[in-house]
Length: 368
Image (cartoon, rainbow, N blue to C red):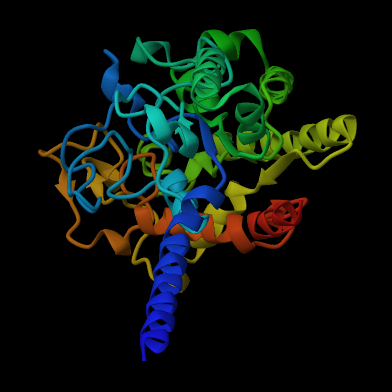
């Protein structure tokens, strides 16, 4: 009888251990995630800066789990949050957050800052923002902190095996070249030459990222900039997409893909993955009803034509059902639109993800 009780106790112990291991496994297996870029992926770094480019007041965050504004330019979760959910990890904290210490460093970090671009003079009107080379300096600093926590060899492994997302380029058009008529950059460059200049500067940034240890980098193109509510409000007569900004996207995105392919050839590996966010957006902009939206022209939060003028504040018009709007504010997609974008990042064909989607990357990398 004692033997039967002992065996039963052993079985219970084994089951408890297995349950514990089951809960611990995702924490140890989830790869680190690093995020660089602008307001489309900023999770709150700008909250810690003296800048006008911030989203830390209501109604931002109205659909976030805490129903509070977090600094994300969204009604709820943004693209990095949803990618983190999909790879079964917790959301990365903003690098400037005082909570980013100890084991939280193993999850990764978000270095993005609203308002920045490829160029240092992009977003100067926002004053104090974390320009891209400063983000890369912070990444270096992060690695020193990680090394102090786990040792040099393990830290290097965590960085090399991490997933990286970088989103740049849109602000170099909307908050630089096209910010005002006859801007300094538009006087300096014709549009095709400006695009070539941006691509050459972007290549330097990506080379630096590679030198800092990044080996799997999702690089998003610009969305259809002329179709955001702000540009429809300012530049269109009848609500059509603004042609000049659409032309800028049409020039920039194919050259970005070409540049990424060149870098992959140079490194003899699929380091840089091009995410065709232009097409991802255009799918639901051209046929919003097919994706459950009632409109892709009008922002949920804002004022003026298409709710595209000014900032989203407590004084703005606010739609009651955010899930019916492709755009949350004058420039940024709603959480529902972000989820559709991440769906394509995960499982989209080569039309959306070149040379492969994130599910394929995860499967390949799990074998090594």
